[in-house]
Length: 130
Length: 247
Length: 113
Image 1 (cartoon, rainbow over the protein chains, first blue to last red):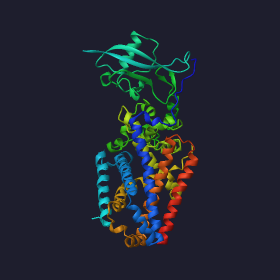
Image 2: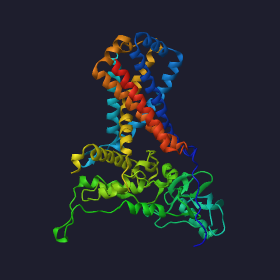
Image 3: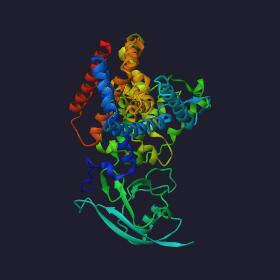
Image 4: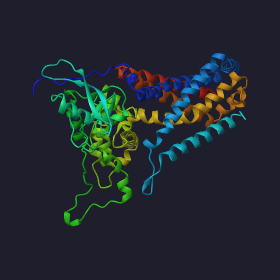
């Protein structure tokens, strides 16, 4: 055999533009920026809380601003994408065999959504939202 | 039976004369119920006998006719012409070096497959007189789907992480290791973990999930890899934080 | 080949992914409310102070912040690689250090309450 096999380059950047499934994957990965940013907001809340009443009231004021509203709505969209993309693949990572057969994935996913609903409602209820 | 004029755009590469691959257009009259492989065979028989590609069974069990069809990894024997409109672009499987035309160099996959010991390593040696290794239907179901892998490498062509990090052992080989690890008769997990729990094993996977989406046999390599990650994580904590369990 | 030590960082990433999936959307709704003119009871200074003053409250708050930061840090490391950044060791040190610093800060603030 003569001649060399040809090696095609994989672009280091932008490979994910080639297919919609790669774009969906990257959208999922990018949610980390928003989860991280929100964790920082929680951290700042703690810091202000530790500083005392005045600092914390100022923080609450900042939460009431339009910028905060936009930030929260954007974070909410990405957080929901994170939650759904995370729950939807749980049967792959944690299949459950009951007797001979594996439980249908929909049951495992459904259980996660049900637990999510309960946790969310309980959290908002205990926080005095309703 | 009706016929349709099909335009094929095939990536050609001749290692003796070409410095890089180029597309060649073929126009062939095809039967409606043909698959892309039939169209290629027709081209080879009637227009261009130099066109090279691998195929054997024409029924999605041998795993040798994998190609990129309109950018998607497919078995060409399972890609029906009626599902495509316009020009059909056919390229060799992505992420593998091109040997000639649609034929790729698959040594990398074969080497990795060997490394993960994809065969039964009995937990206990038994003499033939002692009888069979028995297994319940439930124990069989634990790994059965992974036995359907035909080593067609579509999952490697779909996996962007394999493209970016070629040393990654990859979906099919790790799924097959998982298949034997899940087998109640097998005792070879520790040996396989040396390969698949290494950094270039399962840890290069970022759970894109593309492997499972393109698998022509509906195996779920992405699921297998996540399960291997979870089990390897439990192993790690047991080995490092619970030394009394290491005996 | 040697087994990887990735399980340390991945185990926390997976735990964080699960915890954030369950609680972050509701928490975001909670802290969104002030912008809509309603301050939920828990967010009032005295109430939140009392919540964070209890050891269980401290534990819950620390777990959420630590796991969220760690989850985000690990996924950011992978994402940067996917975006073509090849200095993985440097990226890993930076993101995990940031997550660890944030977590230590959270612990410090909580212990001051």
